[in-house]
Structures are given as C-alpha cells and as structure tokens.
Image (cartoon, rainbow, N blue to C red):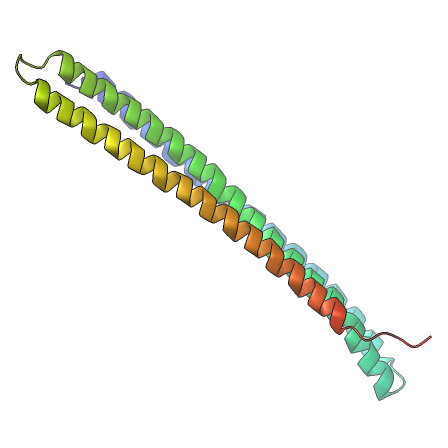
Length: 182
C-alpha cells in the first residue's frame, strides 16, 4: 500500500519532471526564434546587395549571370537552414525523450517494488497468480524495449535520409550553375 509520503514524493517528482520538460521546450523555441531572426536579418542584407547588383547590371546577360550565381548559395543556405531546424528539433526531442525515459524507468522500478511487496505478502496458494503477474510485467517490459529500439532505428534512418537529401540538393544546385568560359 502506498503511503501519503510516497504519494507526495511521486507528485513532487512528477512536477519537477513537468517543469524540466517545459524548460527544455522553451529552450528549443528560443533556439528556433534566434535562428529565424538570424536568417531574416541575413536575408534582408542579401536582398539589398542583390538588388543593388541587379540595378547596376549593364545588360540582360549580366543580370542572368548574376541570378545564376545566386542560385547555388541560396540552395546551400536553404540546406543549412533545414539542417539547423532539424538539429534544434532533434536536440529538443532527444532531451525530452531522455527525461521521459528516466521517468518511465523510475515508475517501472517503483511498480516492480509494489509487485515484489505484494508477492511477498501474497497468501499461500497464490503462486500461479503471482507468476502470471510477473510474466505480464516482463512481457510489457520486453514490448516497451522492442518499440524503443525500433523508434531509435527509425530516427537514425530518418537522419541519414535527411543528410543524403540535403547533400543531393546542394550538389544539384552546384551542377546547375553554368560554367564561365575563360
């Protein structure tokens, strides 16, 4: 049976976890806002430079060459922005996942302690029921571990695909850039 002290300690622990997760979420939002401000500031400066360069072009061919020259850096910047967004999301999610896993592990340990206490105090002749409860708990733990491993593998595959896609986009932009005649 849970005591009042155990319930209060569990509630306190849950609140600490909640506030910790909230702080992590705000850190992620702050990083995202900071990134977007940097990108907006840089984009405004680059737009001003590009406009000045376009206005000073002597003919259509020079204007076309200028636009083409801007294509690859724009693709690289878009890829870099996507990588930063992905890194922020991954970092924030990873920290929240770690906290959730720690909380789940602690809850599992406490639940197992309750089960062990119940088993020790079980009346004679209830060995089959106790074995059934232990088996169910073990099966649930195994299922959780399997899902957790599959999730980690899916994240790793998604990360590899994102990197490959990002690299391909930058290479495609570089390949589309016309070569100047010497």
